[in-house]
Image 1 (cartoon, rainbow, N blue to C red):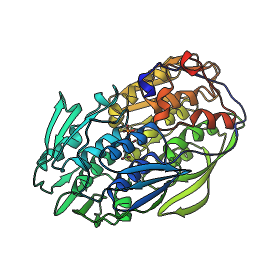
Image 2: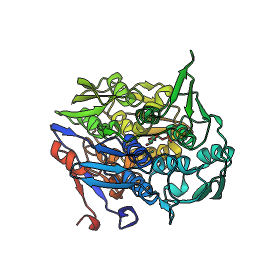
Image 3: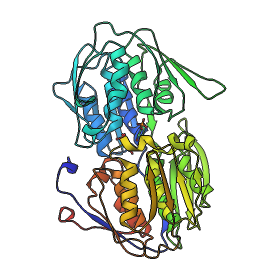
Image 4: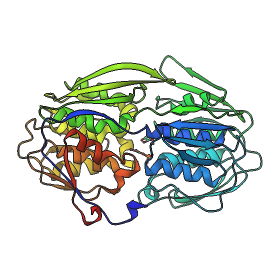
Length: 452
Ligand SMILES: O=C(O)C1=C[C@@H](OP(=O)(O)O)[C@@H](O)[C@H](O)C1
Ligand SMILES: C=C(OP(=O)(O)O)C(=O)O
């Protein structure tokens, strides 16, 4: 895969008057699940707008290695599934590259199968904690072999008769919730997940769409109890994947910080478990108009018109973190141009993403002259609205696509250019990043030998 090859540095330069209309690629969470559930269901699933990023393609290869037939047919992807309960033992290790979601959800999916499955990944994924999904699998009777600290490579051996469990998710994580629910698909009886803090609900919504029996109850304090009836008959379906709000966040912030900008991003997923970044940028004074709000196959989507704005610092409510967890690096970039102080708290999960994002963001800001304070779970940024004196740093991206894209966005409004040490990882979630940002008039260039 390209991220194990030669690093490709890139540089962003001060830009003006970004303009135009773009569509960002399909939502990563929905794309992973489309291939997984399509690969599992009986019959055909036809997917439009699939994100063709490396993370999602790794999930496709894993499902193919377990018996699904997956192919591209013009603009669409066609998946012929095995039928629920009929995945085959893969001949080789499943390599998930950089993708936490693909790896953790697939661990849940295959855990209860009475077969042996091995999981590997790149250097970043091999550092990330897997205990959070391996613990509930152990409770179901799955035998686990893992590196120290429950890291990859991991081998799972499912029991003859897996037992359904009731599991209270100990961290706010859609990946953990989803892994337990997916395990429940191949276990007789009711699997129950208790989710104290709501996270993205794509697994619940999409499994119901494929024909699973799911019951979701929410109490007065917001605690959700999700009950899944095991061994449902899942049926293939048609899916239209909306644009990824986590990718839209980069042109969105660029539009707010580049003087004279006026851009539109069409067809963005507006599921309320994903829109924290839009709300937060609006609270900072960002002119983000949500237009043409509509339903698209069971999900809300809209177009976002974004104009350059004088931003002000705010305190971001920590309880909003799950609805914008992947957007903090680029929110930090908006905060770098806001008047006053922006406080982001409740960010402990950022430390276990593709990199320690809290540290990577703080170091990148400091390298470019931006005043910030990092504590265990909090980042405070004091902005410079004019961008004067900022820039000229080189940012270490640590195999993290969001760090790479966030700092290239920063360099569009700093006085001096911003360089990142590697841009290859951007292809994991947003392969069209350079092209689309270029279309808007952003001055970003790949500067390394590997870009030739
Ligand atoms: O379920 C998903 O599709 C995702 C859940 C989030 O991870 P956590 O569950 O670890 O918070 C998010 O960071 C990731 O990019 C996608
Ligand atoms: C955290 C992310 O992804 P994953 O956990 O799937 O690697 C992300 O895309 O920002």
